[in-house]
Length: 374
Image (cartoon, rainbow, N blue to C red):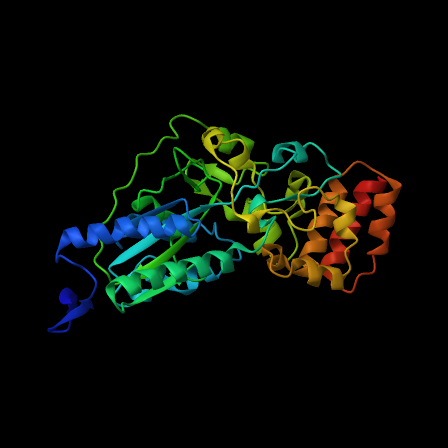
């Protein structure tokens, strides 16, 4: 056992006992990280990197983004102030951030892009087809932290998977997992962008990984393909126009001028990834829990619109689609039905919801009926 100085608290050194290391110093920590990469792979993660906590550049970008109002109704983006960009303010003593990625794209019989050309079909963002990734990844990260603890002894840490004010993408970029593309998602040169991120804040002084270079070049595919023009400039996303925001985060009425562009996308949007050239290197996930459930990859809009609330409660349990809520689910599908080719069956389904208790649902159903019967 040896004690290493991690920093200072007032005038006293902040120390930690490190056990299980045969040799003191930097080489021990490098060896520990190498073992961590192996443990992460065994837990189903495709990559692990270590980042320092300096996010000054990301902080300036975030504050400019908030000042522009691009966060829309996502007030939580402001609520925690600079704790989002200063890890040690959120978890005192944090020195490093362990970042992992996990591939989630299932191997489907029908290419996702083909669904967008079938307006009667429902398109659901690929990350939501299977079980909710939050619990799955958080559990795996907790196991990773416990393996580290078994190796070095008790240490301070906290696991995050979209569960706190954390800048996952800038941290992942600092940890060498990829670069933030022009659509603001992280891109890995060997794996594309169909992956999810999770982090562990820790007080262990682990050796950090270096960032990789940006390889977007002159490509504008994501900007040009965005249905609502939400990518207002390279590396700048106006969430208020983003279909993922409109169908998941927004609780009120979807702006009328954006509804037709939503097409048949009822929960999230993948267009900026579907048409990114780097995703030719993406590999289907081997994670069984990310395989589609309840035919979400092949259901028609009418099939999903006909779910009653009890069915919704049962089938959304353990799924990320639950975030929209039942009224948000009906709102979104009503818009998509309004965008579908006119049919008596669609009109009948909409009329059956025309007196829904929710004013939000009624408004969007009426809009869809007007489109279907004009």
